[in-house]
Length: 118
Image (cartoon, rainbow, N blue to C red; front, top):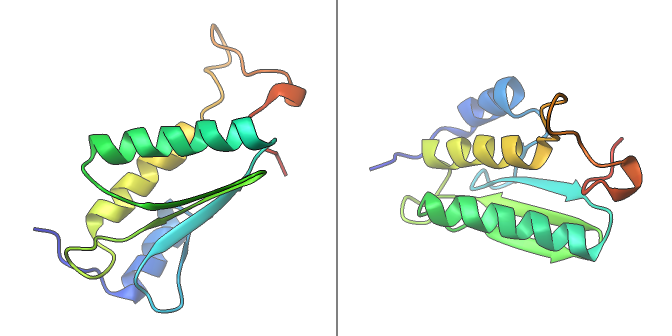
């Protein structure tokens, strides 16, 4: 059983571990939006998140648009944010941000990149 984490602690954890993620105003979910290169990239990201979520038996809200994807994580059975949400967010972040190892696996040229870079 996962117990709900106090929103103050969630904000601290996000600042320390997942600085691009946020808590909604009600303190009931954590969320992030990625800017993509278009529809195909958005679908690839949504499918990657879906795979991780299913493997973790967790069910996020995923909003897929032409050039962005938003994911919201909450533990519905507990009515708020739990350790399960934070751990899945870390897995999602690591997968989505991964760009090859720089040695054998090279990232694609910028014009073919999945994410838009700042």
